[in-house]
Image (cartoon, rainbow, N blue to C red):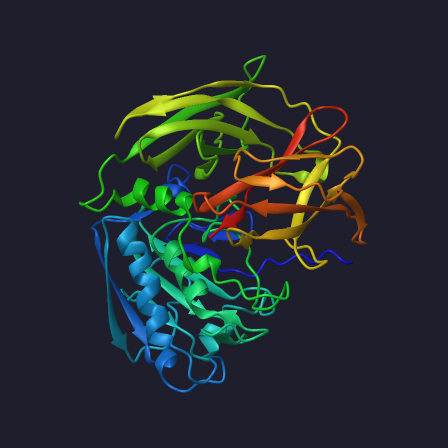
Length: 427
């Protein structure tokens, strides 16, 4: 068996008048503008749908429900937050060129124009779409253009080897609204998802927003008027025992009773984190390191109860003791990838985990839900090649489980635990 890395969802490109490089993202933001806090000034956002999506195209499978996919992807976000996304048809074809200003029209296009093709010059084979955002010094979005990759094919019926159009649009509209990628593998805004049939099955899971997607968008725009008991904030600061701030850690909130992942954030320069848009409830807060290649470490920060729109703080002194076990991949059907798995209630699955130093005899697999059980079927070792060790285990999903995203925890002989956050999307 072979490990396959799949990083094929959209890329977010930011543009304003000051140019700097932020990892693989080109941005022009002044340093004080925080990425997560980009948002539109108002709550009514107009989006132009290029006729390149509605007319016959070699990039979209014939008989695909294109407008249905557009409408459902817009409604997914409009139902989740206090925003009104208004679509209108347009004859425009081109993404606005990179620079200090766009053309003032937020466009979704798949046209094979030179400008759009150039947008994918470096990653034509790996990106399904890209979104370019224009914003000002205050972090207010003034325009956002979505370009579906004109080198790829899309469908709405799960055709093997195509990208799911609705999943792609839902993800990119999240970028258009100001959201970045998150570390919850089963979320719509996760960094990766697969082409149809990659694991021998069709996965429409990214069409449906995860709880962490919903909390992120509500943090920016608030909840719809008919939603009560929202929106709380859990924030804090993570440091070493000596008081040194720890930046770049993943921090996430799980509903203590059900074990579902409800929100996610990264710790900033001062070790601070902020998870907003949360409904009232009891939460367990966890942290983990990001770079699995250098050894993983994780732990629990603490437990917090929220009533309605409360703001609560929880700080943590972190022991960065690395585990000898690292988790990087998971999958089904003798394959591995770096995106979440969509599983159905009432069924059992043989799940693969891949990483470093995974040993079937030493590994203990746990979940924060009593409705996900590792069966008596023995945990077995697997070799996936490319320096990736792996294990396989049988998991059963109880019919009474609450749908959502659940993390997988693996401990080894030396005690510390590794985790893949929100890896299982239970439908």
